Amino acid sequence: MLGEEYPSEPSHSGDPQRDLSESFRTKKNTILKSHGRPPWYGEDGLPICDAFVIGIAGGSASGKTHVAQQIVRSLGSVPTVVIMSQDSFYKYHTPEEVALAHANRMDFDHPDALDMPMFAACLADLKACRQTNIPIYSFSEHQRLAEKKYLYGAAIIIAEGIMALTDPSLRDLYDLKVFVQCDSDLMLARRIQRDVKERGRSVEGVLEQYLRYVKPAYDNFVQPSSRYADIVVPGSNNSVAIELISTHIRRQMNERARHFRKAMASRTIDGGLTLTEDTVEGLNIVVLPQTPQLKGIYTILRDETTNRQDFIFFVDRLATFLIEKAMEHLPYRPKTIVTPVGEECVGKELDVKHVCGVSIIRSGGPLERGLQRVLSDAPVGSLLVQSDARSGEPLLLHVMLPVCIRLRHLAEEAWVFLLDAQISTAASAFMAIRTLLDHGVKQEHIIFVTFLVARSGGVTVLRKAFPGVTIVCGAVDDNLREAWLEHYDTNGDTGTVQEGDGRKVWIMEPGMGQIGDRYYL
Ligand SMILES: Nc1ncnc2c1ncn2[C@@H]1O[C@H](COP(=O)(O)OP(=O)(O)O)[C@@H](O)[C@H]1O
Ligand SMILES: Nc1ccn([C@@H]2O[C@H](COP(=O)(O)O)[C@@H](O)[C@H]2O)c(=O)n1
Image (cartoon, rainbow, N blue to C red):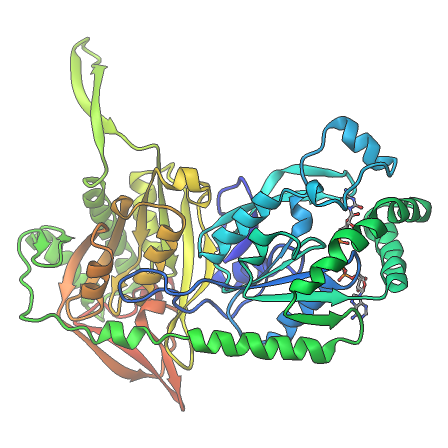
């Protein structure tokens, strides 16, 4: 979950908590606060609720940003919130227009100064759980910059701007419409202070612009749009109004809450499934051929007495086998080459525009090394899914995806190796696949690579919801049971639930224990 400028490939520190805190910069157009996003989809894999969108309009310096930030603060423990400012959508200006702007002869307060269709499209994408890439605007340069900012995963969106309520296509997207009503003198005083301090303006320039453009536009466009507001908030001393708004939002979020993991874990497979040479019948899971050599590796990995050095060595070996198996599911095309002895030879080469890995932190990490060994130049991103300490529900906490997924037109062509150590309740696999689909990745282009699948876990629900996804694993285990553990695990798929002094987890049997812990600790 992040608001991040691109292009750049993810360079996470390996420490999910540090990466997480880095995404929570408190500036406009970025994620302000997150306790993770609970499932936004049903068991059929389809999204069931949009993000909750609040539109905040008001005059320049009326306190729109302040109100938005206070709402976030007052919400406290809620899923991810993003504040999206209309300021980002000022149109691109020609050099002549920039010169006029520096001379305070450019009208930035007419609705035409803003790219409303683009603002509406970006907001609609974010509301519908899709990623969006919004422009970045420089007030000091009076110009839209070349970079864009990537946003994804907000459960609550606050869209603010002077024209946030003027456009019907925008109003249609809001679940709650707010107008900040502020005294004109106060707005002018605040604007002078802010523009001089933060936007590189002179007092004379601010006053000239204010009288020529800002005030008339406020009277003609901004103030009249207050009639569309559900709530009018004062521009100062507004803590009571903010508390009322936050209470309303909290109630809306509670009504959307879902209880997902337990339902996933309790799906047993009728009649049982047979593990054949390289597939689990009925589930369409690709399993590595069960050779004595492979069984030998699993025996070492399952053995609690195996030391860490051996564990890492054999996990790395197994990861390479699995990735090689997964590679069979990519498309190839013929390629003619000439050998060192001058012979022409028709072979094959990969027929993909973009291929990348996404690992579910942190137990997907060992598979990442396998991927890098096989496809050394494939970018690898990460997702952090953790269980809520009280409900055990999966929460999407962090999204750091490669550029070829962040940009929708590339995502539609991309092939993704999704990596996690095991599929037990399948709750985090579900969330990760949904996240990729939200970005436009095709189901048929997702290859989920994992060491273990629990036969009696949520994999049946996963299969039904996403039949196009290929699952490649090395072994299928029989049992999944709930148990109390003292040990805390960070893997979302394990489903840690805290109650009293102990913690409840889903344990795969015979399993390999906590693969991430055994590999990294
Ligand atoms: N309720 C308030 N109490 C005190 N100062 C405020 C309040 N609301 C806004 N301000 C101050 O006014 C200035 C402009 O507010 P801001 O929220 O950035 O306006 P807008 O987003 O509407 O342009 C900021 O310096 C902010 O700190
Ligand atoms: N290059 C620009 C673009 C816009 N403005 C002014 O910004 C105001 C809107 O931003 P708020 O944060 O105050 O809502 C608007 O009134 C424009 O006049 C600018 O000065 N320069």
